[in-house]
Image (cartoon, rainbow, N blue to C red):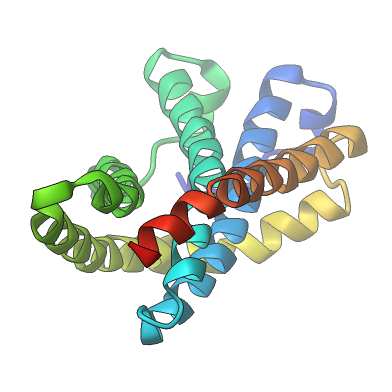
Length: 203
């Protein structure tokens, strides 16, 4: 069974299946937001020396949206493996993606954490920086496989949510607001740390 298939129109009145639809679409919104964020981060890699401040700001900003996506996918994982009938009907991801998913989560967390860790690594700065760079290459491989599997499905899920298909409009608005809010909180965190970032760069 395709794990991304939308469910039937009865989901509007079935709170359990509506939850499955909502989780799937929240994950899609978070994924789309992260795609934009990581693409912007990729542009800073063209000249990290010049764009180091932007690179670090974006890195901090991505932490909250990444946490939201991990929570959404983790919730689906938990509900499926605890035997939720609705999530069981939706089915599991393909075997390869089930193997890659935890590796991608761990790699993403390490990538985002190892960047700021360079700031406090002291004498181990070069080693931590090297680990950060290596984690980027492994992350690119894993996220590439992930995107091949899911990227083409995202537009349909987003359009369905915008048009409130098989869902209640307030629920769709809440999902969009949650993703926008996570980005706003992430940016607030980043700019709150801006003086620290500038001080470290100038040191």
